[in-house]
Length: 297
Image (tube, rainbow, N blue to C red):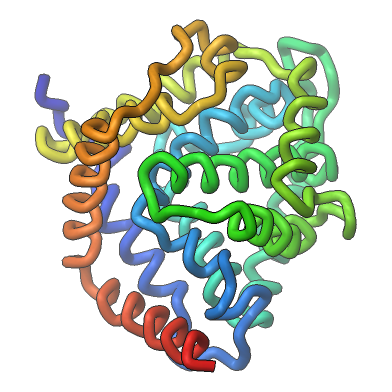
């Protein structure tokens, strides 16, 4: 079915591309918190990133307090494309920007978090977006999703790369307010953390509504709608069994090589659309040049 025109999701690719191009510095003062030789630079720019982003939203939404904050204080219903673009801009800035740019972006997020507080209608518990426990949950959901999506649909990763990514990304957690030493430093520690949090997780009405909406965005043209649905299916396929169980879904079937190739083709088409937007090619070239220089030593 062809989606009807709706400004809520209009310009999905264009707005994300503009945010990306504006967030990659032309003349950085330094290499930032990760640097061009890091695993973080490679993974956060991997072809599988759209799958990782959607998977992260699905995982993060299962924490009732984190979801209550988004539901009660976010404009995701009115402007999902804008929310996705702003989230992307933040991640690009802290990944590829210099330290001053990353610090400014993180300070803006912390300032917004000061206003995000209330009471979850389902559990009756109070929440505050700046709570280190909730910040840690959101961080872990993203890091785990980047690894899972890359494993299934992206570049091959060694065990050392996976541990390196988890360890490097602890700097991102600290930027938004997670106390030093609390973010997982390895895949094993990340897995232990996720296992320990599971008893707190649930599919609240807000989580069910928001994730259904994001996976089936209104206002996309027919071609973009088909691409988005394929990426959403890939995100669901990459979820762990405990998450699909909470969503009331059957455990995902193993991703075959044929399905992996199909998803990568879809991601390639989306990436080509993205690359055709103003400023994206130049930003990509700046990143790649700095990565090549780092590899040369």
